Picture 1 (cartoon, rainbow, N blue to C red):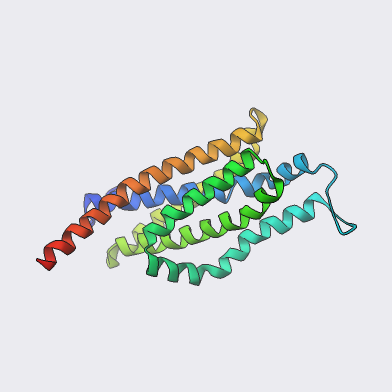
Picture 2 (cartoon, one colour):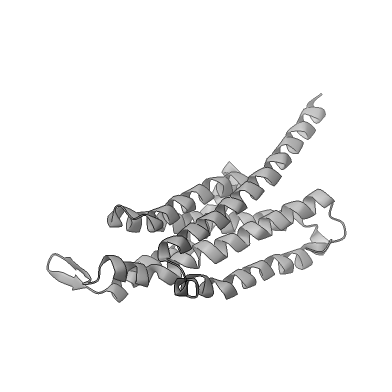
Length: 215
């Protein structure tokens, strides 16, 4: 990420970390479960599902599950309120472990019902994190440089959105679906570690500034 005038080195590091985390969410949580869900269900339910005598095909079931991801977009105003009230960093730090649990349930589906029911929670966590990251990056950028910073930030989304179909489909040519989910989890763990490291320092600095003001 090239330096942006009027930003300190630490602010640039915060923005870069937020961009990488944003990229991870778009590549993994908006790509791997969504792109592979039909294949995953066809492996676990080759004959479809029958509820109360009604047969439900894989395509229908897949559509119902994936639609919950888009439904979480309706809750974006609430996610913004939650970030303002609880802290945007905390929202991201709680959301990533939820996504990791979802990926592990997909990789090791001991209970198909638990795996499917947990996915909407992971999609909601993803939506909350993306809303929080949007606000964080906008707040970090100075007013006269906000357009430049947000353009760079959006580029990370474009890259993640461009490669996410390949992550799920191309990888299956030479590896298993389980390893695809595990690989996505590894990327999310890396994003979590970087985010926690950089923004934990941010919290310590803010705490030190508050203490100095109170003296």
